[in-house]
Length: 383
Image (cartoon, rainbow, N blue to C red):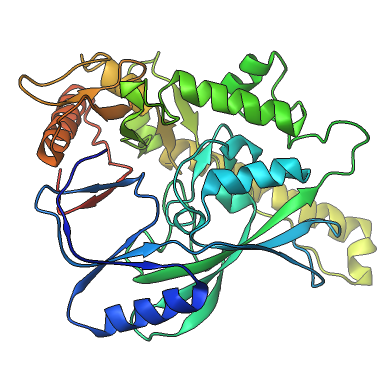
């Protein structure tokens, strides 16, 4: 965003051992601690940060041989240092015919920041390939391995974003090794806009290289790839997450509003592994009971939740805020390409950004009763 004040102390960690040592010392001291990767998803107040900023600048991608694979036996397991640039990792994966993160091309920032908000785009999320992280706990100073399940990953969130203090030292991923003759194929395309751009149906696989090029082109068309000639690219990306509301509340909103029901997995049928199950009467009874449970499950999901995801961009546009909108005298403005991004048009302050974001929140809440949540990390700022 190119806003914000100075740090009281700034120290860069360029190796794993250095990162662990610096973080332990910082957490044991009296200063507040702020972790910084590339800074692409961080907005700092004009007053700066009165504490120690640790810039995570570690590098390294290691292929882990042997061991059990979560997905398929020939999957590739990688251990990546937290300071590696995320898009550089995606480019490496595409070159090596490793599938699973190709739709996450062009996302700025570092690998260590990726699990904090479970990055996702164009139908892929980090959670689908994340195995574990090596995590330095601020409270104990110990480095421990936390599995993806322990991180409680959700839509743009995790335990790390919800208050667990510490440093992601390294990230472990499992990708699919493509053995295709000719162009290595991507994972099935799961996002309509991406499928349309590729002129294929959802569920189709295309070459990894073609998918990456298309995603980068789509992101650039929205100002989501840093470009010195594009003022819309001076932003933190999507400023608001798509809100999730209850099913009942969603019914009160305009019928033409885009929405995506979040339906949980149906309960599994659990049957005993013994000879009794082979008896027809026992099997029929268990299957009938399972059918009743599934019907009850569907009815509950339809009546009470688990919720519906809405389009934040649609809410903003239909609350009367258009692309390019700015408050009088402000250096911050809504992107001229899409309403989800707040941009620095030159000379903006952090206060300008926060005031515009608060204004957007207020308009959407007044019009639809929905409170939008910011996606970037706000340091010293409140909406």
